[in-house]
Image (cartoon, rainbow, N blue to C red; front, side, top):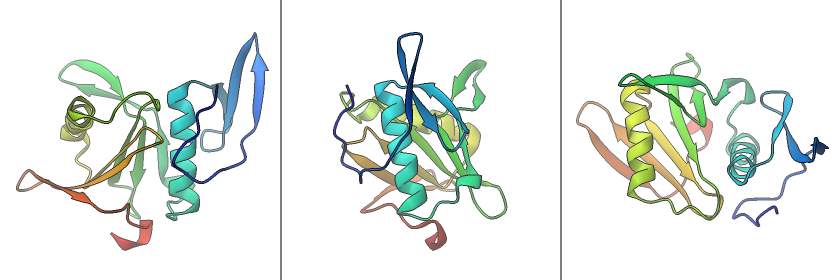
Length: 150
């Protein structure tokens, strides 16, 4: 069931409850349903935390926001030292291609959040986009910066 991802391998805790597999989310400190998208989210957030030095205490996961009167949930939001939105993260299951519709989704969220960086991943492909909020321009970066580099 667990897809091979284009990320380092990490140790996770699993359990089964009522016939459903769960993964322990170290960021939220609880077990949650293990879906293909959640598998990507957990691995990608571990990658950001362990390899790119994103502090776990600055990562908010699946919080609700209002987009034009519709309730939506972002996958993760990472705050800077002043607790201002720095990175918004959108994860998809490995079989879902990161395409224009996914980019439009994260851009719509970012109209509300106004983060200077967008991160997209399906566990196989990862994209980091720097946003020039003032001039409404986007630049794809070659790699995800370390937390301390922005």
